[in-house]
Length: 164
Image (cartoon, rainbow, N blue to C red):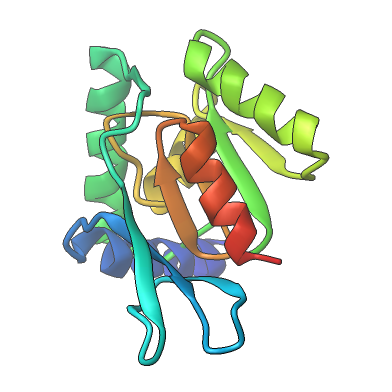
């Protein structure tokens, strides 16, 4: 990667990393036409049937050495402006040793959902994971800007229902 592009990418990540971590909330409602609607905003008309928050889902905790390396990456990113994290499509940040990652991959394969897998145990993968906001565990699923940290079939179902 060219040095200037790397600086631009890392600075974008620094802005994202500086933002407060918030849970992803999804609202399920019935629209005026009777159709089920999923949105990240409460409905202006219609009734909220269910509110779902994606946080503290089952995940494999990162090893201490990986957490230390991730923190080092984040500090470097805060000083820079380069990002190499994918910005579109479906991306799964995972590790070979992670049981929940295997479940997430099986879910995606079972649903026929195409995705890009990034192994956080590689230097480039860890950098991309840091730029995507990282976290304390894997898997991390990012689909068109929406994040799900950890794995839960119902959380993944809700996320992909919104994309249709």
